[in-house]
Image (tube, rainbow, N blue to C red; front, side, top):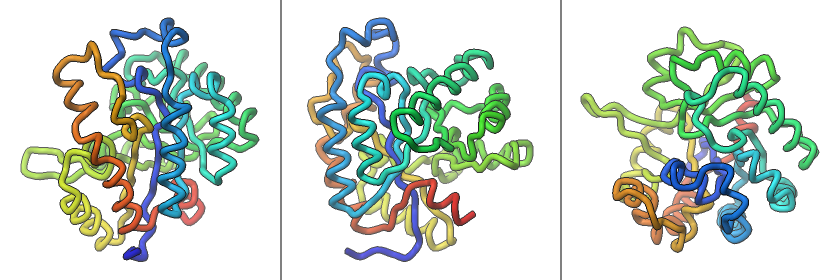
Length: 269
């Protein structure tokens, strides 16, 4: 292994294939019980990849999946990983009202804590959906005992940092400005789409500035047969592009850099 000393953060959005934004209209929540979930197959692949890289991660859990697969969630915790919240049904925050958001937050947190026996202190907004229009969600998260949030792009965070709740630690999605463009990197589609040497270069650039990078992956990205029938062409590209390379990219990523759960970083703040 050829790792630098700075600890970056590894996270997993623990969602199933039909819960992505690409399938939102095709498979409403009330149809999910009739669908064949693939988390029983893909979760062990993620855990094996992390284990091979000697890495612990934060798993942001969709509440529906905790309810459907409590045994898998227990296995994640048994292997030493942290768990956080990722909504009940992966609905973007800006599509919810404050009452619904608060109700689902309380329900999911209690359910996941009851299943795992672990305190839940982190929240990731589905689809990076914390926007200025829903900054009220940050106040609700703080009131409910959440300590950190991962819910917006870095450029948006930098623009509004001064007006965010200072008691809530923010971990935005990494991105760089290239002229008028915002260039995300380090996770999901971008970890698959960019040539790995470019990803490595970007992470090294951030680390040289003594800043950490937040990586995120999805279980379905380790499934070359993830369903895509019925998707629009745009979503088919976003979902399936370079899936065959994802396992290799994750392996190289874990080999080249140090990663820890977000909660470990919180302890050092």
